[in-house]
Length: 428
Image (cartoon, rainbow, N blue to C red; front, side):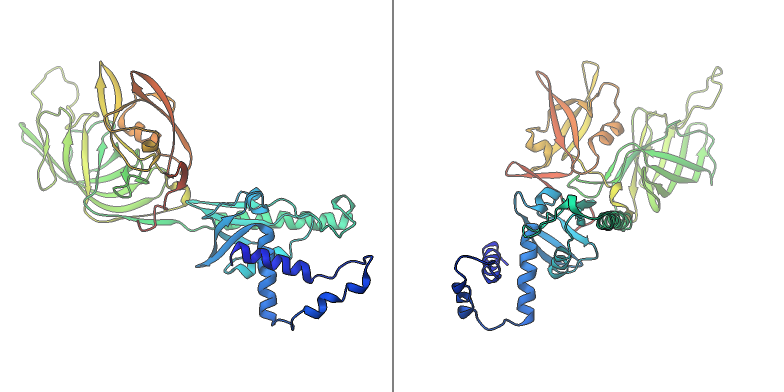
């Protein structure tokens, strides 16, 4: 129902209400002559619903098992409670499925108490509490005139509403997303890939880069620092070349759970004695020259080396909303300038925070998250760029001098305003 029609209903309801004793009592019966026949009960209920919703100041529509907030009137109770257009109302002193249930909760809203609402905004589910409803003007008793019993009753109801909201927030199910095959991430061996490996040995490697949900780079499915577990399928060393084939079978997400996976090595980076990876996923590296002074065998790969692992099966990530982290819409690479490490922007997604701030591919960041990039590796840079959707990250870009900028994660900009991005588990 439109706002105009709602206002008309309010005016109608006000006109139909009995007038108090006045100086001209003879005319009190006049409105009754023009009053139409009694409306059906359903129509009366609908009017009450709309009047109640207008009192809250939010236009809502039913959507699945919740109510979608279509608009919020500035200065209304809904506005003061922090509701925004696009929020999904889940509860109001009970589950919500249609506007009538919300209107019923509003009609039962007792003066001196607060109405507890549970809403989902983007990835976040929050408990919202409105301000206390003011007593009707016709009342002669105010909040200070409540009896001890009434005060205790109101306090108990508010406490129960807050507890119910927290219970709903805690019971929100995990969000599920499937990462397609053929995606890959670079990994590293914190202590190097050791020599003398044998078939069946177990290894743990660390994700040196993040793996995004899709090409939009909006949300991380695999954060940097996650652990990949691998088993040695074969290992040979003939004194001239060393060959190691690894099967990656499990992934332990940083800040999340453990998942079975299937992956294989596809490439190696760094100066690693001409190391390479064959089409079958076998790492081949030249054996080191004999050195009588060497106390321990030289590792197959140094700690600085990076091994790319490709997914051979889809990875289904099932985590709570708090796990997912959004980015400012930037992708970067490591560069060295006069011996100083920085991160060059290789891609800026149109409409995202980095693009809205004027950042362009080719520009270089010398500070991320309030820390200089001089001793920052790529994994830390990505870890600092991504964070809670809607949060801010401070960066500085080199434009003759270091220029500070504040970017917002996990949002898109439209008309100069930031809007939440679609959730990671929704279809794009």
